Length: 396
Image (cartoon, rainbow, N blue to C red; front, side, top):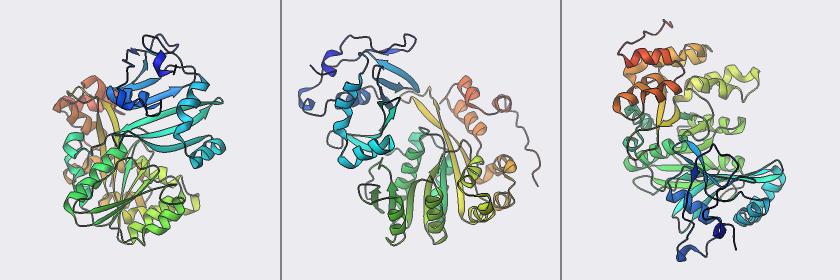
């Protein structure tokens, strides 16, 4: 019998302090011909978990409402992992896994029923998998609970908009919502370059071409060179991961395109240094000038536990819109003053994390204790929740 057929009622994993999920492993007849691992993906879908985690020596795990929970199954063996996961790989992905130790790809369960973003990798000589469940429907700004000024950022004719945050902070969902908003309102061509494709867009007023690295184009270099010759108005360049992708993004912005990209940074202000880290010090002055001239906004995002019915987590955001003051601070390398400039720019649609956390608490989306836990300045947030505003230090 297969691994899935023997798991009912078995307490898997070796961490007694971690909550266990009791699951019904009976699978409908119409999906029994699917790959065996699909049954685990379907369990993730059934419980509306955000992620599926598979690791040798542990029972399958899910992330529910931000917490990792083990399924009520026996621990996976290396043989289980190879049988369940290797059939998902084509020859190219198998070669990448063997040569580089890890491979990322998108995986669809059923007939476009549910898309997952999969990272399959080796650790301590064994296979591990983390798969992020991607919503089939692209939520709008109100459904996500984003600040109202996010709409303003979709109206720029050109320049660069960066979404900052750690892995799993919902950056891709927010960008998808922004692109869908544009597609509903403008007769444009939107081009996305992704590795892998996460959300599948529907043509509306705008029409959208989506290119996946390794499937539709050889590599990032080829896709980025081709992009500006494909007459796009809006370009999504997945992650600004290296010098090449960032320089391509800046070039596209300079030549009249609206460019979206993501970066791993914790705040809007720190994203500037994160970009500079890609380059040698001798180039920092030129890169700062390029950002000052072409950056339109940075949206930093985190996900926090929600108390709103039907939502396990909601985003909290920091929005930095590049006005003349912020442009000058970036040019002068006075990044430490950016948080104050964000607070001063409240009437222009800017918001820092503490102000947005205050709004989420007052709206009844999150608990006060959760807001204080994730805040980088809980004392200031406590005062804000009491209605006491702390004036920003002078920055001029």
